[in-house]
Length: 361
Figure 1 (cartoon, rainbow, N blue to C red):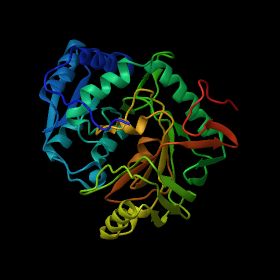
Figure 2 (cartoon, helix red, strand yellow; figure 1 turned 180 degrees about the vertical axis):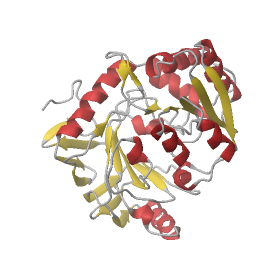
Figure 3 (cartoon, helix red, strand yellow; figure 1 turned 60 degrees about the horizontal axis):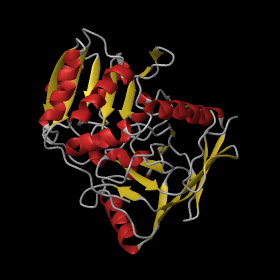
Figure 4 (cartoon, one colour; figure 1 turned 90 degrees about the vertical axis):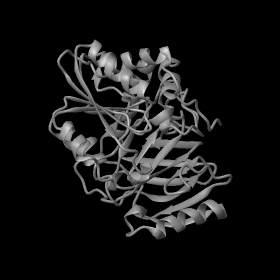
């Protein structure tokens, strides 16, 4: 599976189609809307200009907030952000986040009524054009939206979720009373002509569920990647790493000597044990064009499941949930490639292959 992606040097004309699609179909951008575009020193200037210029074309009032390059995504929950950018966020109706990701000021903006769209999952950087063009122009994003809505509804309607794999995954979650989220990239539902979310990530889609503290028992056999910090960011083990979970907490790391050893070493180096709590969310990738690149599109690879560990104190409010969360300075992820996911015994994905139509209840 590919692990390289093109780096933006000059503006690709197809990217203008992507930006227009994001504003018109996903954000329902209207004249006079106050748009704040968040970037950092990695973001190609022409990408920033494309989002600003297109917002102005829609008649919006647009400005750019430029941050210094932050630490890796794993450390997002503990980053101290530029207070001037935070101040600007308080005035925005729509925040286009090209560089931040999870941050308290983003949550605060949503809670006061702003909307947030995250092209490139916030940390898109210099890979953003190629990934968004491929994942949004060469597939039907509206079909992905409708499918993600169906899968999210299945999560909401179900009591139990079991995830297994031939590599050794076998973990179960009690999801009674929890709400599935489509994570389809759309703030606006063009079919219904109404708002569907205040916070969305593009490219689509990864329907899933945010979990309360203490959820999950079993084993996860990691055969896709481990995404953590510092020097070992985004590692792909050559044989599985086995994580044993007891009552929503990682208690044992086994398997590949190098990758399991590095993960144990990193977790032991943290100032507290909050990084061992999880999974605190899981999401099913549904995009047939997503690949294993340096862009966070890899969390959307069709038929894979991404698990998150550590902080979800900001993710839960963005998902509209009210339950006990995990507060941590770190949030790290892992991916399994060939899962079988069942909801109340009904198969949603089998050995990494998704049916054309999700099962119905």
